[in-house]
Image (cartoon, rainbow, N blue to C red; front, side, top):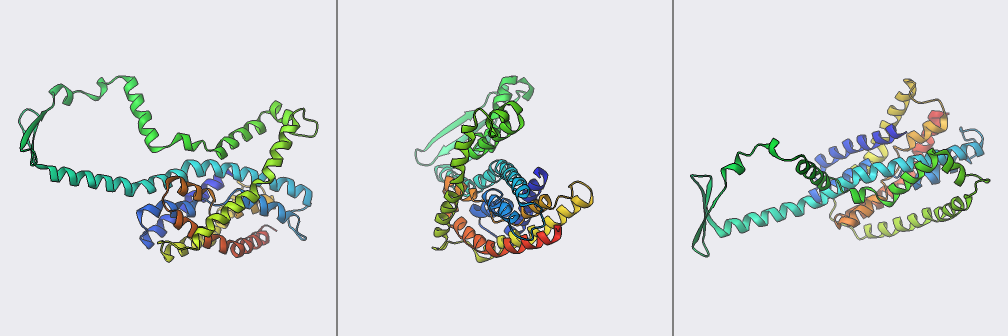
Length: 340
C-alpha cells in the first residue's frame, strides 16, 4: 500500500505537468494544479465509503463484520501514509509555486533600482570594481582581497559546511510545517500500533488505559463531520468565480476521474499478475479506489497558509467534488466487478 499510494502521487504529478503545459497555467497556480492531480482524498473519503461498502447486500467482500474491521484498518493506513506524503511533497510544491512570482517581482524591482542609480560599472585592475553614482556624482572603488578569491573550498571548516548544508535544506524544506498535526498523529499511531506493550496498555476492552482510546475515538467521531463542514465553506468561495481557466478545471477532472483510475487498474492488476499483491478482493478494491478519489482537502489549507490561489482552489474543489458523486460511484462499482 505505501508503494501504491506513492505511485498515485507520481502518476498524478506526471499527468498534472502535462495539463500545465497544455493549458499554459500561470506560475502561481501551477503548484495547485499539480497538487490536485497528485494528492487524492485518501483519508475521510475512504473511511466513509469503504466500511459502508461492506454492509451492502451482495458485497463481494464476505462477512460484513470481518470486512468492516479490515476496511477500517486499510482506510486508516491509507490516511496515515497519504498524510505523510502530502505534507512532505505537495506542501513544498504549493509553497515554491506561490512564492515564485513574488520573488521574481522583487528581483526585477531591485534590478530596476540598481540600473536607475548606477551610470556604469567597469572592472579595473587589482580585482576592483569602479562604480559611478549619477545622483551624488561620486565614484566608489570596491576591491577584494586576493586571499578571499583564491581561498580554496576545502579550507573551510567542517562545522561551516554543515551549517551551510542545513541552511540550504531549510530553505527548500520547511521542517516545522512538515511535522503537521496530522503527521505527528501518524507517528504516534505507528508507535502505538507497532510497540506491543503500549498497544496492549491502550487498545482492547481489558486494557488498563483503555479510557484514552475511548476518549480519542469520541473526538474522532466528530472529525469527519467537521471536515465536511470545512469543505463546504471552501466550496462556497468557488461559487464566486476566479481567474482560473476552464481548460485547467476540465484537465484536473479528466486526470482525477479518467486517467488516474485507468492507470490504477493497470498498476494493481499488474501487481496481482506478478504476485506482488495477494488475492484479497477487499484489499485490491482499496488499492484501486485510491486512484479514483477527489483532491485532498488539505490542499485548501495550504493555499490559505500562503495566501495564494485560494479562489482557484475553491473552484477546483467545487467542480471536482461535484463530479465525485458520479465518478466515485461509477468506479467503485466497476472495481467491485473486477475483484469479484
